[in-house]
Amino acid sequence: MARLIKASAFLSLDGVMQAPGGPTEDPTGGFEEGGWVFKMWDEGIEPTLGSLFSGEYDLLLGRRTYDIFAAYWPYVQGEEKPMGEAFDRAAKYVLTRGDRPLEWQNSHRLTGIEDVARLKETDGPDLVIQGSSTLYPGLLAAGLIDTLILMTYPVTLGRGKRLFGEGTPVDRLEMTDHCVTAKGTVIATYRPGGTLPPYPDEAPNPASSEREIARRAAMAEGRW
Image 1 (cartoon, rainbow, N blue to C red):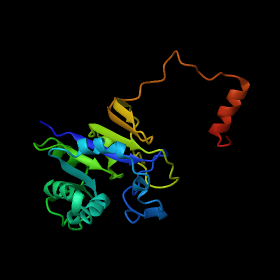
Image 2: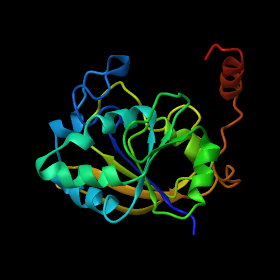
Image 3: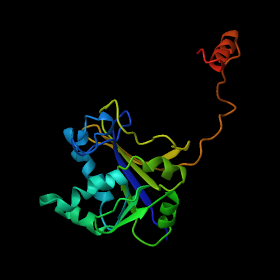
Image 4: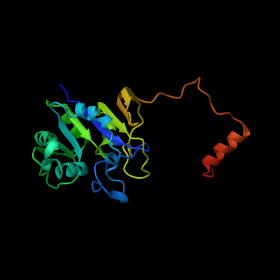
């Protein structure tokens, strides 16, 4: 039986997913709001995270998220230690173009989307993605993501890496579950919903007035 790929991400209302966990996590591009999830922590997301990381799973990560995890989770103590031990045990599949060593135990290199597709067809636990913004366009375009869980916080961040970057396909998503926490975080679960249908014949069409014709001409000439 093929594995499922379950992806999850923390998002702002304007679609930013960069560095939710800490101030030094990922300042790429001058991002200054690292740790924004913990600045406004919402206990209402804890059941979702608990369900996502319960039982057996492997991790599918981009290289930078792998580096962040590898520098943190093997060293945690206290109440976070069980999660660190679970991540140690899990296989870590890292989609990367580079050849730098993957030094965290149970780590494996993937060099392209084709490798992910082959991995998905093998026996083993489901694959969980957390963060890893660079993975989404290619995986969505290849139809490899089975479940997408978005935890959207009531905040705008203005700049930063976004979940649906360049290369994201034109596709529909079907919402299968949703809730709103007491603090206003929207937790929505999606699955692939097929291609976008054509514009329906019965839908309104722009008028062919002189002004509309002139507007279209201006668009074609780059003056609009």
